[in-house]
Length: 206
Image (cartoon, rainbow, N blue to C red; front, side, top):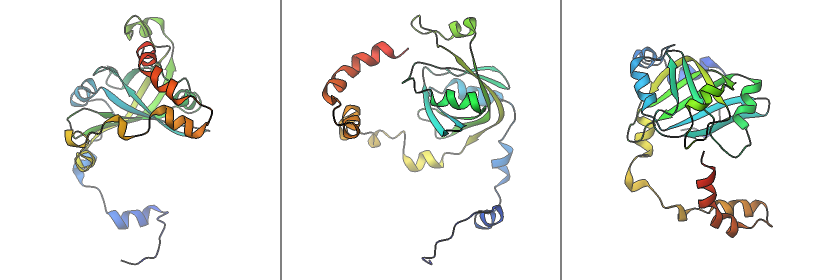
């Protein structure tokens, strides 16, 4: 193989390398949430929300009990905005640009589910209360309008062995969150932060 570096910057060049997709990979794409795709959403406890704005791109992890992202109808998903770090990266983006994507993962299942569309941030007291956990309702709910939805094959999760028990590591094999911050901000009290975190997590989960 030549060591020459080539930047692929046009569609014709890209297709010449990869070719056309098989028909099955196109047939699985829908513009509405099918019964099968609804089942996948209802069994998923984790999703990644992707947004774009003037500040750049953002991918935000979202998780709760399976089905925490609710199927309102065959075009609409409802996602409670649970407590986080209050950076509001995703929400800032959605205020500027409604384009968004969701990637659903289901523990033990190789296929993932991808949804592309547009989203708005909604305040509706009754709707927020319907998502309450431990008496705490989300401040807002993200209403996601599906434009395209399709499943992704197992290859990435098979290669990564994501769900294989032997590939799990213990948390102490990586620096703690306090140590990571201290490396950036030298006067940060990493030991106190790490010691207090388990209790702080319990109090701020919802």
